[in-house]
Image (cartoon, rainbow, N blue to C red):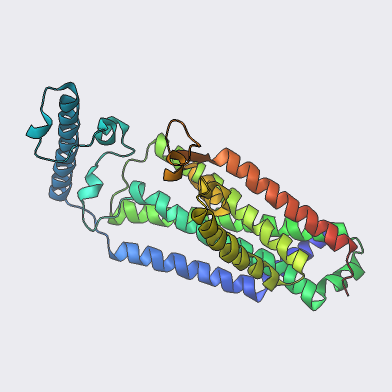
Length: 337
C-alpha cells in the first residue's frame, strides 16, 4: 500500500503530467468558450422556420424516392425525368438513411447538444488517448533513464511488483482523470445547450448510444496508455515510444499502404491499426474497395466491407497484451544500471 501511495505521489508530481493537465484544461476551455460565443437561444420564430425547412427537406426526399420507384415500374419514362434520380432507389429511401433532416440542421448559430455531443466526445477521447500515451511513456521512461527505478528497487527489491504497481497506478490515475474530465466536459456543453442553445432530443436511445461510445473510447484510452508504458519500458526511454509510433505511421500506415495500393492488395484498411482504432471508437466502420470487383476475389462484385468493434478489440487487446508481456520479461531480465 505504501508503494501505491508513493507511485501516486510520483505520478502527480511529474512536471510533464502537470503540463498535460494544464493543456487539457486550456483545450476544453477554448472549445467551450468558442461554442458559447457562437451560440444563442433560438426564438420561437426561428424554431418554427427550422421545423418547416426540415419538413420540406423530408418531403423532397420522399418525392425523389417515389419518382425513382415509378421509373423502375415503368409508370414514368426515363426521358420524362428532368432531374437526377439514381438507378438504385435505396440511395434515396428516407427509411434507409442514417439520419433524416431535423430542425437543428436549419438553425444558424445555435448549439444543439444532442447533435454535437458525439463529435465533442470524439475530441475528448482523442485528447485523453494522447494524454495517456505520452504520460504512460514518460512515467516509466524517465525513471528508467534517470535511474529512479534502481533507487526504488533498493527500497522494494521485487521487480515485477514494482513494475506492476507502476502500471496499475498509471491506469488507475488515467481512468480517474478520464471519468472526471468526461463528466466536467459533457456537463459543461449540456449547460451551454440548456441555457445558450438547444438541448435537443435527449432520450434513452441518445444516452445509450453516447454511453456506449464513451465506454469504448475509455477502452481505447487505457489501451494506448498501456502501449506507451510498454514500449517505453522496452526501449528504456520516453523517446522510444515516440519513435515507434512515428516509425509505424511513416513505414506502415503511409509507406506500406501506398505499396499495397500499387500492388492492388484487396481491402487494405483492414491491415491498418488506425482502422481498428476507429472501429472500436465508432462501433463499426465501413470501407469500399473497388479492387474487390476487378481481380476476381469477389464473385458478387461488392466492394463494401465492415470492421466491427468486437474484432478490433480482440486485435488491439492481443497486441497490447503481447507488448506488455514483452516489457515485463525484458524488465525482469535486463541490467538496469
